[in-house]
Image (cartoon, rainbow, N blue to C red; front, side, top):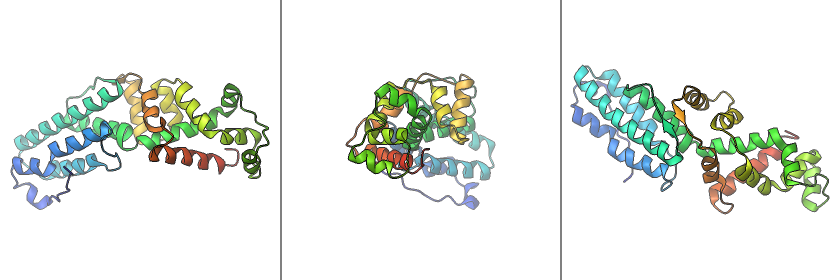
Length: 252
């Protein structure tokens, strides 16, 4: 069942019953859709959670009765904790939040959802790209790539004024990506450091691990789920994106 957006009129919220407002939030429907995104049954290309958060904030800002507000918050707390647990189970990570407040728990869910579900492909692509850029010499040595090859592909790449190392990486880019996927062992904090460019969600994940709110190593499963295949449409697109970005940086 698809989740259908229903506009909430702020002027009417104060007079709406709790039951009516919960119906507008459609928590059970959204929960099922997000569960399917987490397990890979449906595509993560739609942010179901952002709609719920926007509606919830509108309700809290316009509702007057504190008991009714608490009742709605309790429903959101159950919704949030359930989905946080689903994400943690998927990636074998543990969570020990220091809050029972539904809004803060909703923030935790929002960050985990964006990182582990909605924007996962973006973060994996960023990681692979940045790891190659930082470690191209060690990758070439580990794979024993000939950086002075004169085959047609290498010669064509060299005409773009790329260095021998850059040419070597790009001429065997699939092998290089597979090496990063299969051989690189980084802790979650090391992984997050590679992709940390000031992104809010990444910084929140770093804080969660630093403060022991999250624990457990998700990195290999996280990366493998995105680029484990060479034939799927998304894996092909990501590999191609990495190839293009490396070849247009002129030596990185």
